[in-house]
Amino acid sequence: MSATEPFVGQVVGAHPYRWVVLAAGFTAQVVSSAVFQGLPSIAPTLSAGLDLDAARLGLAIGALNLGLTAALWPWGRLVDRWGERSVMSAGMALCAVGCAMAIVDAGYVTLLVSLALAGVGAASVPAASGSAVLAWFPRRGRGLAMGIRQTAMPVGAALGAFVLPHAAGGDVRSGAFPVLVVASTVVAGIVLVAVRPGPPGPFPGAVGSAVDGDDAQGRSDSRRLVLVACLLTVSQALVLGAAGLFLVDQVGVSAGLAASVLGAAQLVGAALRLLSGPVADRVASRLSLLRIVSLALAVGWVVTAASATVEALAPGTAAQVAAVGCILVLGALSVSWNTVTTTIAAELAGPGRAGRALGRQYTATGLTVTAAPALLIALGSVSWPLVFLVAAGSGSGAARLCRVGAEVGNDR
Image (cartoon, rainbow, N blue to C red; front, side, top):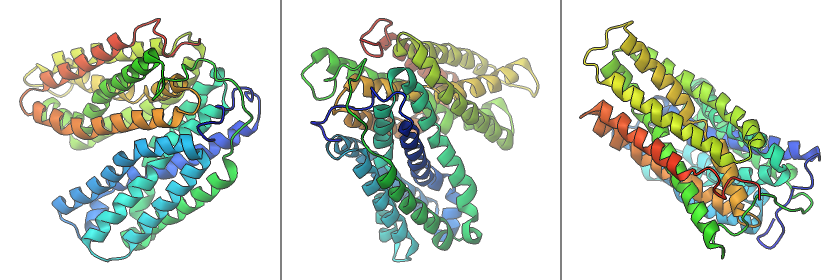
C-alpha cells in the first residue's frame, strides 16, 4: 500500500481474510520480539557462549537495542511507501542475515555489527504489523485486533527466554542464533504470502493529516499522544528496570520472590493489554480509557511512595504486603495501555501515514524505556519515595494531556 493509495479495510469488517492478516502480523511480532527482547533476557547464556565479560556483553546488547531504536521510525515511513508486506518481509530477511552473521566467530566487532543488523531488521515489524492489522479491521473490531497483536510482544519475549537458552544444548552459535535465522526466514516467507492490501474504503475516526500533514490540530494531537505514551513509559521503565531492586533492598523480599512478582505483573499486564482492545472498541473515546489508566498509575505510585517511607518493612507486615501488592498491580497497569495508544496513533494519522505515526511513537517510547531505568535506579539510591513520586507525576501529566472530549481518540 503506497502513500497515494487509500487506507484500506474499513469496508471489509466482515471479511474473514482479516484474521489471516492478523495471524501473520502476530507471528511476525512474536519472532521479532524473540530477537530484540528474547536475546537480552538470556544474557548469562550469551556471556558464556560468546565468551564476553560484563562490559562487552552490555555493549553487544546495546548494539542490538541501538539498531532497533534507530530503525523504528525509518521503517515506519517505508511502510507508507512500500506497504506492510514488503517492509516486514525485507526486514525479517535482514534480521535473518544479522543472526546468521552472529553464528560465525569472526571477532567482536563483527558480532556487534551482526546484532545491530538483527535489531534493524526486527524493527521493521512493530509499525508494519500494526498498520496491516488496523487496515483490515473496522473501528469496532480494531481495538480487539490490536490487543491480540500487542500480546505477541510478551509472548515472543517469553518464548525467547524459554527456548533460546536450551537450543542445541545451550550453545549460542549452533543453537540460539540458528533458531532465530530459521524463524526469521520462515516469517519473511509467511508475510510475503499472507499479508496483502484489502479493498479500499473510508477510515472513520481518522484526522487524516496528523503526521506531516497540513492540519495544525492534527499535528498537535499527534505530538500530544507521543508525549502521553512517553510519560506512561516511565512507569513501565520503573517496573522493568528498578522495581526489582526496590523489592529486594527496601521491602526485604528475596530475589526469587521479586522476580516472581515482576513476572506475574507481566502476565497480568499482557492479559490487560488484550482486554483493553475490546473495551476501547466500546467506549465513545479511546482517550478517556487512557486517561483512566494514567490516573490509576498516578494514584498507585503515590500509595507506593507512602509505603516506601517505612524504614523497616518486616516480613508479613501490612506495609510490606502493600508495597508488594502495589508493584504487582502497577506493573500490570504499566504495560496495559500500549494497545490503546497504538490504535489511536494510526487512527489519528489516517491514510498513508499510519506507518510513520506508529514508527514515531515506538521510537519515542523505545528511547524513554532505554534511558529511564538508569536514571530511576540512580534516584532510587537516594530516595525510593522520590522515584515513585516522579512516576506519579508522569502519570498525572499523561492524564492531564488526555483531556476527555479532545479530538484524538474519538469517532468523527
